[in-house]
Amino acid sequence: MTIARRIIPVLDVSDGGPLRHAVESADRARRLGDECLATFPRALQPLIPALDGVARRWLSRSSSPYAAEIAQIAAILGIPGVFLLNSTYLWSCTAVAKEEEGVPWLARTLDWPFPGLGRHVNVVRARAAAREYFSVTWPGYAGVLTAMAPGRFAASINQAPMYRRTRHNWLRIYDLAANGLNTFANIRHMPPDQLLRQAFETCASYSAAKEMLESTPIARPVIYMLAGIMPGERCVIERTETGFQTRGDKTSSANDWVPARPNWEARMSAEHFLRLSYEEAAARNRERHEALGGWEGLLSQDGFAWVRPPVLNPYTRVAITMSPALGILRAAGYEALDSGLPQPVTGVCEVRALPA
Image 1: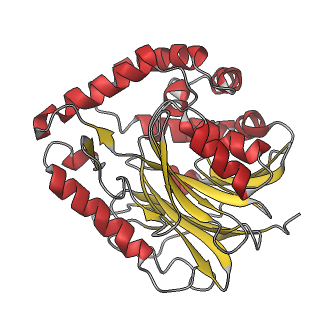
Image 2: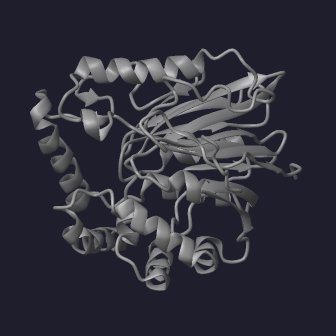
């Protein structure tokens, strides 16, 4: 089958940031919102406005520096779900930071259940106090999941494992609900994707970003992948709300702690949520991060040849490679078009920005 591949737009939102992005791409944001929310179970769809209201109340009480901006975006788009999608990051991902000829590179896939994310992905150029950065994102979204700041650093987010109070497969729903209730009732820190945005806006170096991402309290556990511009500047930062563990070797990650920790369970897809055991979930995550961490090709030359099973999976939506030292970012969107694995639905978008 011949696929007509879209062009990923590169948009300059230096003056206005995500709010300007939402204004200029409002129609695309509404189409994407409709596609994403249509995947919610039919029984839950009438509850989306109520869930959106809960997310809005939580964000207004949190330490989010962007809550007012998100409220403006929601008012502009006029659709339910903007607060909900901006206060959660229910994504699975695989990422690696490695060096090629002394230059750090970062590669990652974003694996999400929502169709349309690969078709509608954008790259935006933003500018703040610490100079410019390029973010792979969507109109209506205020945080940062994947970005590159030329001459400074590149970073991405992976969802962390889930804290378990129980062990049985059928009690995962209870643990998921208990974790969410605890966040809503007791946690007032900023979401981890908003902290990453703040790092790109304010940190002038890899070391400054590393310190901020390690030490700033966050609302939910997360895994940050960080790469700088000098040899040795690469690490994985595994975060809980107030704690961290950082490793500078074996810098690949999926959605589990490395090594695993008691009472934390590797993330899994929705279709496996009630089926996989602890051990099976851990094994699937280990396969992904070891496959990408052990890939011997060149990110600088081999395009997206590394996007193959098990890294490529039914929920892969975007693949990205970045080198902040060289000022290079490449991105491609993926969608599941038939019963097989996702395929590229965009051309490769390449940004080359000379480091300041």
